[in-house]
Length: 510
Image 1 (cartoon, rainbow, N blue to C red):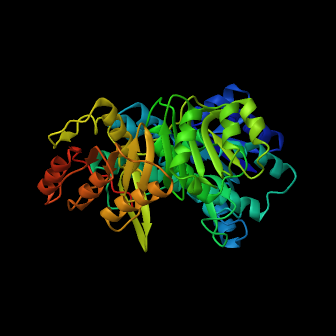
Image 2: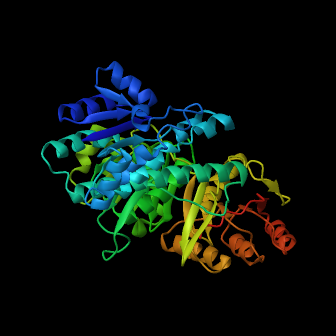
């Protein structure tokens, strides 16, 4: 039995080769892999002894040879194939171990296009595909983590068809992901990221119990291990809907940097938010906005949950708490809540990966776009349109309201006073309905919105929303502007003595 080993990532390759050698396998290798194995004392044959042709063109051509691919591809159960292999002098290769040139690492460290081109693997993917195609007869190993498993399977003869098929699937996933990465990089470099094809690839992080509903299957797939780095399951198992809600809550909370922000989310939308002097105070204030919706909700904490905050949270039923981290005392207190799920990032503050692109499924395809980013200066550089000028405290509330509105389903209107969300209207077909719905909810909760800052993620098409805001005692408003009736809106703000600011940027969230 003969194995061909040619790897870029050489971690564990010596031990793997030694294990194969102990099992009686002949080892064939290339370039740097051959050198490493030879220096380690492995009895290894250099590839050109098999190909009868030297590596050439600075190593661009090493394994693209019929003695290699013939040895991998001929069918062991086909007499014609066996006869032809013997006639041509093609020896069998029964195991191929390949991982590919470090293209990802290369594009992360340099913009030198010549260097990038040289790190596009050709022979490696060709061998992987050949071995995967002939998985009935050939073991294809593309993952360092599979070395021990493969050795064990060979040793105890459990390398059956299913085992080989599983390795085959991994192999095609490996080359597909690799080629997708190259194509996406080239489109990003030369076509602003929007080429003829768009490839979205992710590695499974974990399977959820089901999807949005019990009759659906679901799983989390991640880009470059970004999700697993920032999402640690401390207590309980995350559901599909949990992950979606937590994502929305983190987006809001982490956008406030080092501030003591707490956001409560229900079904993807905020139902409570506050930034006060401590996380405990922030939670207490955030809960006042809509304690009914908060029941069974998701809480994101931009900091470390301590015992006092944990005890307060335990007073109601919460589905999930996502925090930068938890103290040991807090975890002990939360143990009493059997249905509560806890997730952590193991940090001082919450963090987002800030993916560059966003996509949504539509029937028959998907929409793809640049990620909507809220610039830090959107509020501070907003254009004052009214006669009145907002105070520094009012500008702080405008910033909070603006970010909340941007991360809330459109149409949305948000009211904030003293760094606390007082009311929110979201997902409405009419902007005035969103404004009035929020005010109605605030009244039901006994909250006085007088003096609040108000934000709308898109322009007001008519002055009616301004008039309604004035009747509620709103003092400052921020919106993108851009309506044909902007002058009427500005005139209404001045009539009511409201400070009005235009950001020039819309943040629809559908």
